[in-house]
Image 1 (cartoon, rainbow, N blue to C red):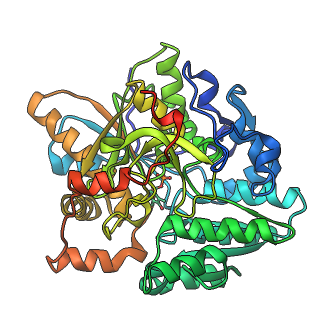
Image 2 (tube, rainbow, N blue to C red):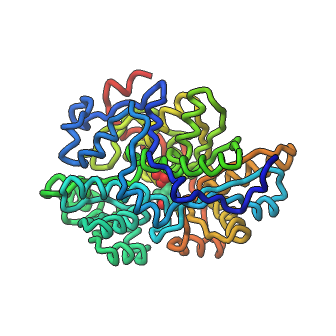
Image 3 (cartoon, helix red, strand yellow):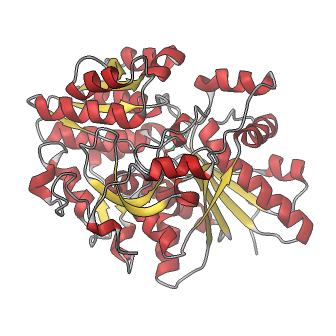
Length: 461
Ligand SMILES: *Cc1c(COP(=O)(O)O)cnc(C)c1O
């Protein structure tokens, strides 16, 4: 009956998804709308146009259309590096001596090294189609900036990246990849924007934060003719584009009649996790199947696990719309962790709603244990994982070890979001035994919560 499952399940070009899936259309409780940061009024299409691309705003605000056709040009671009392989982790299973069946969807098969390219090409495409000259953005660890530079180079769009200063200095190779693809890269906070100058003045010598870089990028986009701001995570449009991950994974598993019991992903702003689980969660919501979903966060930045579900600013400069989400407060400054892509104070609003409704679990892990699992994984599966992705690996390994105790043959699927070649300083710390764990105390969290906006919507429980 059951076919032997190969190490890698590929889809042919004909089998690649032609549409993105918008999970919101099938959700009973929709994520809360974006609010204006000053007036606290619901933001509509016209309100968002000065900052965001038209087509992307439509996607952002659409809670009812279940499928969006992927434009032909984007599908052609996807074909250069997709389908992303769905791998049966036979070697890891052997090493763990577990009866569990472990699968991972590997998104590191492109130069930028992560899933972020899936949304970068879509956003660049819509900007180009609108006749814009260029886009601005921020990048923390550098993966998003790299992905966007690649997409803009391909389409001939200008790309201005504000890179968090500490990464700019610590990750010169990421910076140079971006420059090689033609992007301009500015360390943030810079002296080029009002918000950058203000932050430099208030916090002399600061090495920056993602929230601050976002504010700078938004300011430049709104003040420069022919430019718009694009964001690599958190927004629902990004989760929509990333549904390609889950759709491909599901199509591959369906070929062999495999149904995962547990689906695991790391959660920074929530885009890869949201994309991976989308089609499975849709089935769960419709009552057609049941799955366990686990969001994995760093213990140093536990938005879903220890945050509040309220409206908050998406950025330190408080220029972006307010979003209702699990948040630690935009004033929360996470400790310098080695998974830069997971150092965000908030979370995508759709995932936040799913968590609030009890449809998804969240857990936290410490970076030293994460790197131990990363090294174990690298040794047996061959891929050197990104620190962010390794959060998912660690929880998958733990679940597989539980199966070993109970003898259960559970099917575990996790998202392997990228490779860690640009994170070797982090691996070096781990190898030298000097990596530390940072756990915020309740007082640390209270300080972050103190920065939450004071508004009526946040009073109601
Ligand atoms: C950015 C990034 C993440 C986290 O971002 P999400 O929006 O939560 O998916 C995870 N892994 C890698 C490799 C990344 O670059």
